[in-house]
Length: 215
Image (cartoon, rainbow, N blue to C red):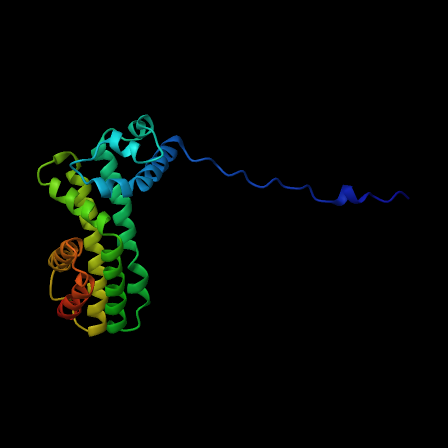
């Protein structure tokens, strides 16, 4: 009697599922984010007033035509770039808030990162404050600024509510007020740092170390 061949009993090999390519709209948005990321440093160095797509192209590896294809004007590019950066800023504190074992660890972890970003990423923060100030006069990207501001406010509020939970009492201030106090101090010491004050980061940490438990 003829034995069946092994190949006859072997299950058919399944082809691995093919990975679907991103939709055209998704690919377009991903490319915009990539370009915004790589031109962020140039934007931070030039500032809002001196920035144009042509100047950004001259200071990057991308042509003016490529930038103009993905961004309608400099406001579009700046808004996209700052949104990418500030989204990272807001998310970098989430692990500290989630993993802190007590209020002291939460405060010190937050202050360490905040002082570090003030020292190492001052041009990026300056670009954000420049853009936010321009939104008082320029309506075309005002909605983007308000959205980014709300993102940062939510980040601060997560910190404040976690501190309040450790203290066993509700926050004393609203989300808007808590954010305004912390952001105002950060902007104040950012200016001092840019002006050459080497102690600005440490001074910011000292001020917030006193403020945070009161929130």
